[in-house]
Image (cartoon, rainbow, N blue to C red; front, side, top):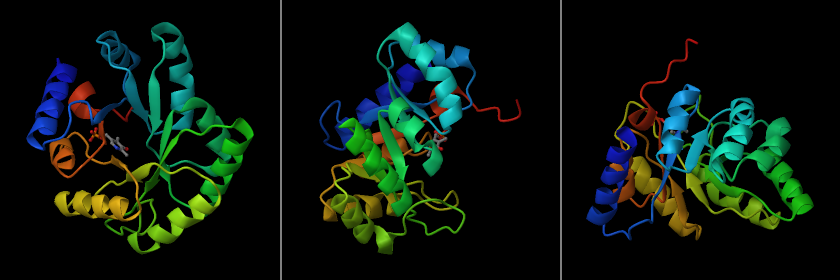
Length: 218
Ligand SMILES: *Cc1c(COP(=O)(O)O)cnc(C)c1O
């Protein structure tokens, strides 16, 4: 089945890159997938998932966690500030911190709760106007702003432009993380996760290669 194949390829890529076994977290991106496909992957023992929409995740994961026990769910889609409260209570990690207003809200919630999900800053490495993310030139300042608010940032995330080779974007993101003393690198999807691991990814986000194609028409 697809999960076993992707897990094997991930382990090979870790080894080929001289990375420690288990150093890369496989996030199975379950957005829009029918419930039976998600359950099948849970039944095979996988416990780390990714979602793009707060509402969809809130409708799905409380029941699945009650049924299967602890599951890490990562928010990888754009997060509206007015959904931040729901998000911090639902998700173990948020990969899309991308603006000061959201960072402020997350910092306040973290202070109230005495804990925070693991946080990644999304970087718009391709500087695409329609894409979310902090521009590379603004990144160091944004990280400093987050640190000044006591907001713990553990890494960076990017979604390279579809029409280009992802490699230069992965390398650029790795450089930005290292320059800022950040260990986490969320990069690589179904079509390029091995290249991302070679470039230092700690978290790969794999959807259709595990679950099959998404059907947005429903
Ligand atoms: C949907 C999505 C993925 C998974 O994409 P696939 O091409 O299906 O592997 C990864 N990251 C983000 C941010 C996504 O929105």
